[in-house]
Amino acid sequence: MTASELSQSAARQQAEQVVDEEEARRARREMWEQIGKWTLPAIVLFLALFAWDRVVVWNQIPHYILPGPGLVLETLIKDWPILSDALWVTLKITMMALSVAVIGGVGLAVLFTQSRFVEMSFYPFAVILQVTPVVSIAPLIFIYVDNRLAGLLLCAWIVAFFPILSNTTLGLNSTDHNLRDLYKIYGATRWQRLRYLQLPTALPYFLGGLRIAGGLSLIGAVVAEYVAGTGGIGSGLAFRILEAGYRLNIPRMFAALILIAVTGVVIFTLASLLSHLLLRKWHESALKRES
Amino acid sequence: MTGIAPIPPMGSRDKLLEMSAIDKVFNGNVVALRDMNLQVNQGDFISLLGPSGCGKSTALRLIAGLMRPTTGRILWEGGQTTGDLGVVFQEPTLMPWATVAQNVWLPFRLRGKSYNSVKDEVLEALRLVGLEKFGKSYPRELSGGMKMRVSIARALVTGPRLILMDEPFAALDEITRHKLNNDLLELRDKLKCTVIFVTHSVFESVFLSDRIVVMAARPGRVSAELTVNAPYPRGEDFRTSPEYAALCRETSEALHNAMNEHGQVPA
Ligand SMILES: Nc1ncnc2c1ncn2[C@@H]1O[C@H](COP(=O)(O)OP(=O)(O)OP(=O)(O)O)[C@@H](O)[C@H]1O
Ligand SMILES: [Mg+2]
Figure 1 (tube, rainbow over the protein chains, first blue to last red):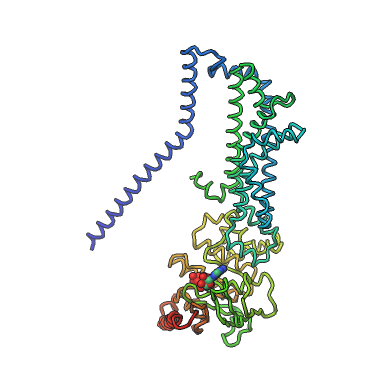
Figure 2 (cartoon, chains in turn orange, yellow):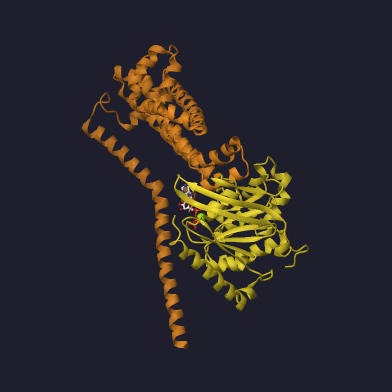
């Protein structure tokens, strides 16, 4: 009796020991993952820059073929007045296109969920608009739309709005069926159901779409500007890259390229941050990140 | 727990609603309910007991007005208004983005009442289910049993005339279920509400209800009705009494009969 009790408690202690070790290993691994998440990309980036620099210096590559990172940085600073203007133009178009994509995408999605028939009628057009490459529509747009800014905006919008539309539509239709019944039992109006049930349900889906659309609206803005070509007034980063290309000003091309890439990363990060802030209290996706 | 104005004995209760000659047919050939007649009286605790697919949920959905009977009528005494009903589903069915208090506020909110105007009712409902400290928590922070309590609080916050529960505790563990069964009876004693409770469990139906409606499948119909005359409040004494065991045996037999019946009745 006592012997079996003893062995039982011993086994239990042993079991605790084993679990502890496992937990400790897991905690250690998590710690390293946390550290690695930031340091590894930084180290790799630094090494890549270093290798780039060495390749240029050791092979004596002329700067009109491949400038070193130092020269690119120098150009970035030297040409900042021109580049910052261009960045501002591109950023403005991107942000405007994204805003219109959000308004249009969510608006259409809400319209779609109000009536199946509206969805059936118009969803195919949204798909057609999405699958047609923007470079192939853009020339037409610039023929029909006189205002250059409006044309650019339209192009960027076409690229960006679809993920928001399709994700939000999916979200609005993903409400829990028991909750839907409950709303019906309590005599909720269409507006109440939309406001209190469908929109909150759709929020995580929408934010997923926003993250994609943010990057796409930048791509749309840049591609549209390539197609629109030299416009003189209000020239964005794409125009500066083209212009620098004609003049064989390769360092400036690199500088502009880096600005575009950084802008894309910043947009994505901001969208992710927004998503985290809005969902962290209740949504599974945010919970996993916390722990 | 002694109620101040006790629920009258079963024979002398006022009628609350009546289902008469209800048929419900799905897709033109699935007979979910055939000729269901049921009178629900104020203060009744009715269990619908039966095998899977016998139309228990369908009966509740009909009473809740979520669907219309193919034939037959459901008549509420004095007419039905929204807010007459509270519903508890098998899953807690809470809105994950809203706090516990906001979830309980929902029935009022959908009737256009601001939180502040019904704060007392919401807090009282939470107190009744023992969650007064959790109003500001989010559903994900609660255990399965606690979520179910929130769901119950939401169902009774408006003081409805009838509470419908569709296997509310089926997904919970035995211990939590016993506790919630006890608490449910206490609540019912305090609030004098009428309950229709769907369950698969003979033990649960005997412990909780004063009327057990045994249903049979294919087609879904009422097979027998039993009365549980044991007085409330019922507690652990009742669960271990010979009377309880006898009632469970009787109910099991009725359920067994209902399940054997369906081979003889053409669907
Ligand atoms: N919306 C529906 N469309 C078609 N058939 C349905 C529908 N709802 C229920 N049924 C059918 O009606 C019958 C009764 O279903 P119901 O859900 O009421 O049974 P139940 O007694 O609640 O079963 P369970 O114990 O499994 O929940 C079943 O045969 C089911 O397949
Ligand atoms: Mg059911």
